[in-house]
Image (cartoon, rainbow, N blue to C red; front, side, top):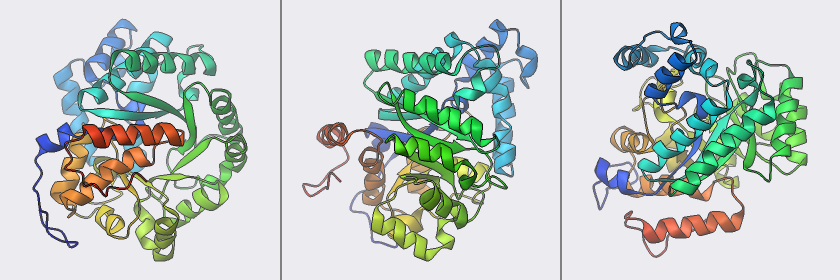
Length: 361
């Protein structure tokens, strides 16, 4: 498939990408449940009436409307169907395990799951009990499957900073037990990152990794605040970065990775189509780009699907795409030695047609 940067020496199929070892660095637990599990939990918990349909087929039909969400805020409304079902330890454990299992089934070798524990305490669980349940589910998956997992705790833009501080405290409490980073999620408009400055200082001062949703439905100023006020090491989405060429150069120079979620970016109208996505611009500007799912359920996607759509619509070569896939391992929130070992194994086992000069870093 041709690209402005050259012509491919190979042509990829979806099956090729499915065979690649992959990583997913931006995946929300409560947006990535199995539809069958949503229905099963709703029935078991007496909450079937909270769903827009009472069958798999009906729910699938309803989910097609996600494509017409029109805005990030409308897209986020879909969480009202899943979060009420994830208020027990058993449900949280199950959702975490199944997410890891679904990821492993498409050859995702490394998965970072993110969520906000404060959304799962409505029926009496403590933040710690919520966190333990999710970590237990991920740990079981690691025992059963060929996958490595980590967990990211999200502060929420639309909550008081005191709530973000409490979540940052939990993240620090668990930093040696599976939590690898602290994040800020939710609608950007009117909720700037600097409003949660102290929570990020607490996380950073305790040596946690930081990632922040920024530049998704707000301008580059949101990204600048995430970097220079809050100290983010990675940026979630970063669609509006292209509006600030000087900042783009800073990303390239300092190797700051973007967690891009192409289908989600279309569904939230951060971009009008995949063909209009700035991913190509960022790749050709030598900015580290990773491709991720965001919400496997709501966007009805997988890492394989996201990479395949990028290859079809975003004017990148097979070699470009291979580097994007490897970036998922290069920029994982893991200790350097573990990250390098995972990447070496990926290159050794991979059918990616790697060259002998592929840089580990």
